[in-house]
Image (cartoon, rainbow, N blue to C red):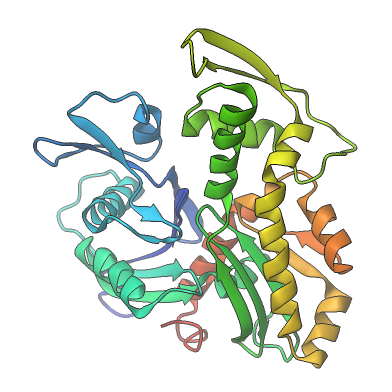
Length: 340
């Protein structure tokens, strides 16, 4: 460690469409929804993370809630910068005589364009980052799961986040073939809203749809440990009178079927482009599932039946990418070949 290393603060950021996770000193110090509440008249930041999420759908004309990231990339540059800056401040709320220089590693979707990568780098730099590195999400997830990415072995990961699903085959510290599709958790939520509108004539917001996904979300219409029906309350589309409807996991499995089929197609397409030797490794080891989407009931079973290759859900799939980003941060020199 250098003489002035205490002047530098090292943080790893999993900048997700749904949640932003920050790791400092190998610990998760911030895990908040990726949302900010801004005052329209002044542009001032009112709330961030969970506090802003509680305001979503309940604001008046002078407050707007913004999700700065869409489909895994920055959609609102100003809001993203404010969000990153605000979440970095959450790490250590104690007053300091000086602000340390920040060394940041941010993970990005593997399908990011140069423009999208530039937007992430600029946002992190404007939020106080002196040195900003980037790592692709599939590689970060592999590190977070505990896979030896440098070994001459084929490994495959499917990381289903909020905005994108990242599918990658890795070997010898590099991505051999990959797909990044913009079908993920947000699309599952949108499917549920649409289904409730068409099937039950009930209007629900994003938060309610998200709750339905968490409570009774399923990829299979037949589960061994079936969750109880979830009661949904909201206004009728035509009459605006209150409604109360029980929703079963079978209904949600039906409404998510089309989106999950697109994920299956992308996985099969990636397997088609996998070299035979690596395919054999993947067949023996299985495929790893990470991200919030991995928690969807029966998804591993459905994908196993479709591909005839076993799927393993990562331990703590929500934090796998963040943990891997933290490992890359601690070993920047060792994993120089992974960092951009």
